[in-house]
Image (cartoon, rainbow, N blue to C red; front, side, top):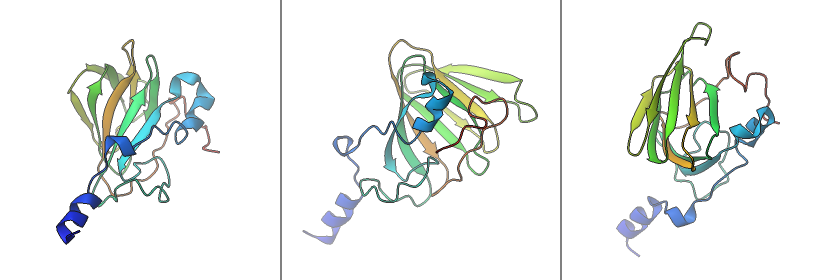
Length: 165
């Protein structure tokens, strides 16, 4: 096998080699089953924790890339990435994406996104999302750092005070 063959093979993460990880964010179901969702990692681990032993994940140099499966009616809770922007790109289904004001989280603005729609949320802006369709939503999540800090959950988030253990 040539060096170029080895290089290109080391840069591929096939759909068949991925799996839906329902456990990495499973702690959020403590706040209710509507917060249950799956992460499907491709590049880096996102901001969900340490997945350094998962050899299927391509190493991240500048950003992370994963897919998220959000069941019908499920919610991605309000959270803030203080250090990085986050992008959602819809592959299947329909999402309502909401940004929350930084001061107290009570003022919001929401937009519906569907197939091939994208939103970029700047660092420091609280955000949440909800599957408003009648089937699972699948969307790309791109986070703008090799290893982002864990997000925080403001007092207005259902996750505020929920621990990972």
